[in-house]
Image (tube, rainbow, N blue to C red; front, side, top):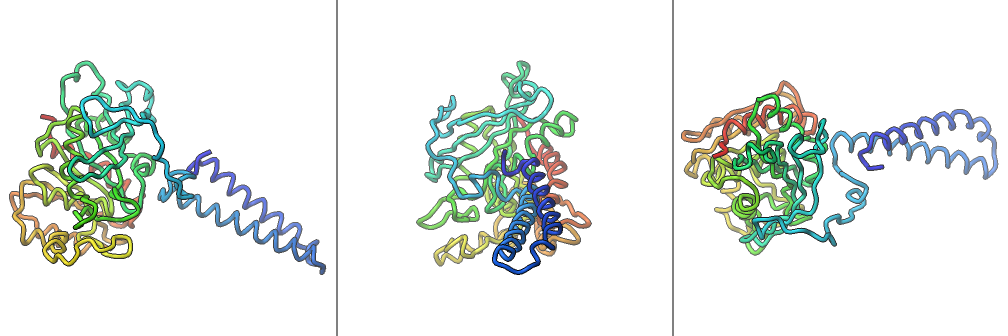
Length: 370
């Protein structure tokens, strides 16, 4: 049973309840003196506390998906030692597995689409990163056999895993349902985490002498995907979206690379590169690079292209409201900006799941298949 299984959570809760009842029932017998009674009281208290904290921890993890599996929880690397098949058409992408979408008939790609697990080898950046690609049902249907599709890069936050985008934020299923309801056009999603040089948080920056993360996302990734799948190479074919750190990256890449991405959507994004123990020294004294990584500064000092931006915040619960309003004010033509403002909503999966469906519809409306 997986870490995020409701059965595991149910068993943990049941164990906590049983141990609590047992503690109440047996306490009078263990109240007398003697080392056995003392050990019994200690054992019951420790077992009950452990079961209680395990239940709370599992419930929190199921809600926010800090960890996607037992191996992830215990720090085991899951991507080593995998024999891979090369995808047709590209030397930069290897397909390492496929899975069906959890929808009726999802076992058939022409009905439910398909999720492919891949490894991307960055030609310029020299960065290799795992990712997931969602291909909509139309991609496999005969009438669309020669059609191209728009695509969007989707990033989770730091230190999240790409699996969060499938399980907790449900991007593929949401895109499937929105397209089925004709609210958006079929769209390919390229899903991964911003941490392409784990465990370091590189904030989508080209670090001097270090990971060239911006080059990977802005150049290597769209090139590799377009060479492997039926996705065009023009800016109008590509979008970028994400939450938290991924939202910052999405806005940053779309702002600085309007020649490659037509749109960027940041859910609960912040607007300035973090610099702390997780990032290390990102700029090595380069003041210009540090300023460029501040999106509010860039809007004032860097020519704005024709990119469209979507930003989100809430009146209560988010810490980015002021900066989001500043971002909206600073966007000038030919760029465009849209926003989602919730009455309340914190920096969590519950909030993002309220923003992702309209966000996907918005993104689809800014992209073109041709």
